[in-house]
Image (cartoon, rainbow, N blue to C red; front, side, top):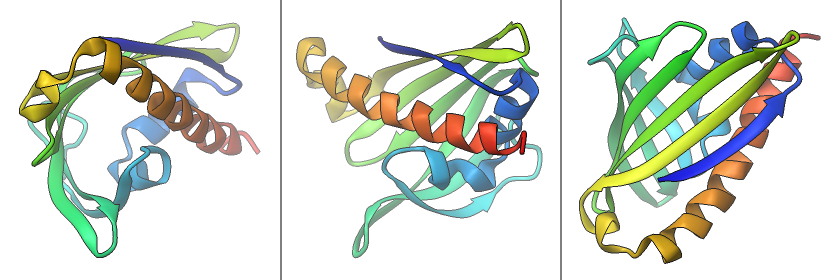
Length: 145
């Protein structure tokens, strides 16, 4: 499982406002290009974001579904992007004096991506998720303005 961590200069509330607004997903998730729909009830478990990944005209439409949600503390998502497969992504937040310490974990759980050795996949996910967290931080920090 790949793990990235960062301190976001925004409150846990501001970070979770972005994490739980499915319509912002394409603004901070590297690879997501557009949002087609967000099911009412997201981020409650079983509710999904319908998104596309890739670059036009090579877009793949799929879903990200909430598996576990603890408000202002934890969000676990099942990310689908077939034909590459499915992954599990977790976000765990801790308040650090009014700022948010955020840990992001990701692992491939189904499909061809599970066949890639961890030594190859981990550095790629680490780089992508570092950029994802930077984008998320900018959006959350912008809410303070």
